[in-house]
Length: 111
Length: 444
Image 1 (cartoon, helix red, strand yellow):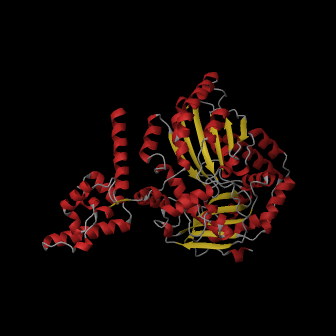
Image 2 (cartoon, each protein chain N blue to C red):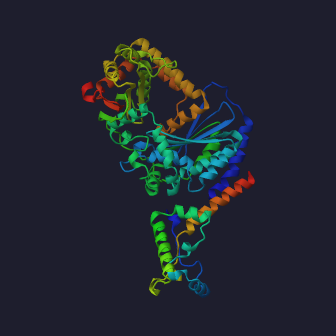
Image 3 (cartoon, each protein chain N blue to C red):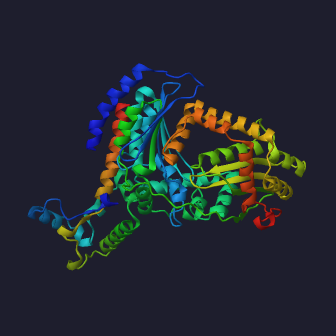
């Protein structure tokens, strides 16, 4: 499935972006950006569509983050997610889900 | 996508002009003339006139179950399911809603050799139908849609009749691989066929040399224009599989209950050998293809054989399966477990006798002619018939030619066909309570 290859790193690299990314702090738990999305209907559906391996990795990262949060610690610095290595693994699936939803909404508006 | 932009307005202009000229060009019940042309990329386009202003268009591909390997068994069943799934260019939602909105239907069908997608719309909305029909040659098989439809597939398997399953088993015994593959997905393959292997199957079978585009109620130029823009995923020519070997033997499946269904077949006629195929079709009607009245008994020697076997109720049908390069001929019978042995015994004796009377042959001819003209006379039957012929033999015969060919077949030739079956090794497919069902070696 060639069209579902995830983007790695930011769309446009900038120092400001990197500063903001590191400031947000979720990377210190080893999370990726797509692990932190609010789980609305679209995201839920996209997560459902993830291949098994990506789905398990996501769950592992989230469970590890919850554990770290509970013990009030963070990962050692070499394990933090880097701004350049943040994988947007959910993006292709989420885009497709949103497009399908918009198609449905358009249809309901026009027919 | 660029091709879509240029195509649609052109289609519209030609189509409108075509429909203005003749809205209802042929009287109901009359058989239609058929136009066939072969495009540069070897795609066959065939069209016929309709009796009502409804357009039916089919894409028929030689992608049936005989092309499956051991590991991809069931791929052709999923191709039939693919009519309700998303494609590379449009979502399942879009396909279903747009076709529904114009009052159309989209159906998929398939057998051991072919998979067909047929769209049926009123003639003024044919563009909408074609727009979504063209997408179906590029199915996407998204993994989540396959898992979402697992239940549908299971329901389809559960709805398969025991007669059909006995026939599947007989094919398995007769051909083992290739034509022996079931047209239904085996249960152990449910959920095992990955998107990648399905797309590979599509890429190896969906190509122009393997396909035909046929229409009823659409003019040939319009449909040729549409066919030219079809974007097949496979680029090869027609991938001819070698002629299948006939083996014969047993394929039995014991299940609970006290009924048994048995299919016994020998070698029949190949469809590409046109005369032989027709001879076997006459023979099928002559020996008893099915009762002409509801709950009645078929005539011919099969019907008599069942009567001789006793009073026990036996449901019986002669089978004649003609594939491109091989065929099967025999019967499928179903009865209580204690009666089936005797019935099969008598029926096999009738099959082995290899005799057909003059009276049976002329009745067979009349029945076959009625059946063929009946198919050609209705639009729904016609689209399927010309789709099959165009995809398999790359040409389409009109009803008059076939009827003339039937008249030309002598009793002697039918007799020879019956002798051919009688002389071949038998294959037995049986399902149910098989306590009294004979093995193939006992029937020799």
